[in-house]
Amino acid sequence: WVAEALRALTGSGAEVRRITVDTTACDRDTLAAELRAAYAGTADLAGVLSLLALDEQVHPLHPALSAGLAATALLTQALGDAAIDAPLWCATR
Image 1 (cartoon, rainbow, N blue to C red):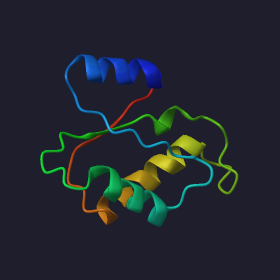
Image 2: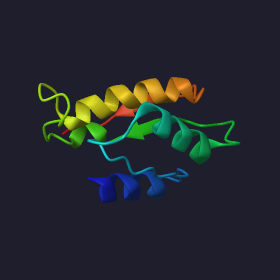
Image 3: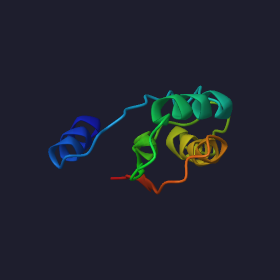
């Protein structure tokens, strides 16, 4: 899925900045810092595409949730913490 999404985006002329997230171990502060670093100086950010929801493994600390769902909630919070005001698109199957 990741390779296909990257090809589709770059093929349409999008500038892609990829952040790899460990869906079972990431934390809000670290993710916010990574987002700030990746998008520093980007005034015309069109949006953020997340493939996190594709991770269906059980989250080790929250077994009622998939790791992808928990990471998507974390991403939403971290985007706010990083003051990134852009649309968030979440891809699923």
